[in-house]
Length: 318
Image (cartoon, rainbow, N blue to C red):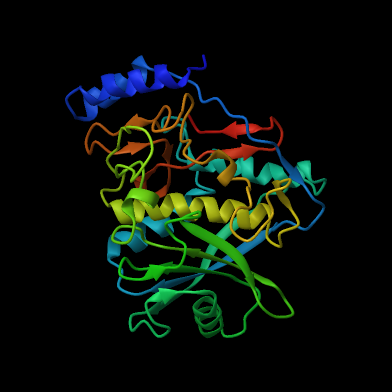
């Protein structure tokens, strides 16, 4: 069922009048299974290479990070290939299987894409300053990788670091390190201080847009749970469009508005999503955290929708 704008606002007004709490949120999600109407063009393949095989990540912890942040991010990476068992469904690994299917659609086989953290670097002294720019990225990456082009560096910035464009584009980004090898990289900002209303939804009320139902973060930390969402999006798009010649939406390929495999499904976390509503998710009865996927170390995650190249639609775990 597809609802119009008036019906959506009526549903959200009804929900906003309800008392809060995990039980009430669960009832709300069951009572209003509404579908998202999308008119976005399809993501298509443009003939370029994809990232395949073994992907070795170098995590660069830029600034002050707590143990929770590091454990959750590492557990998310492990979860891409983790089998949580039949009693713990759905699994994050099912989401990654959809990402792996891009190879088949591109005519490049159907082998697993194995992602593994092989190196971690900590920069507690903010060696490149506290504002992320293109020059900042190049400097940090070269220092952290030491010229090793066989890894994919991932810069994760602390909450007191400003990321240029963080609040206005994708909340994370991927690109290529300048040089002969065109080494892919990922940058993920912590929006907790800078712009939680832009990049921490659905754990924080948005700065603009329709009335919204918020969720408790599944791992109890708004910053890192928002970073998982942003990291997941950037990782998907780095794999499917590493050199800007892979999968993306036609007529969208410019510096800040390229619509790719994750951004095509922005704001969708479950079936029935619409503006201001995540779609179907689950609520942990013990913590009240909203999630849609089980992962390693007993962790639960809220994972964003991804464009399914076979069905040509947004795909979610629930």
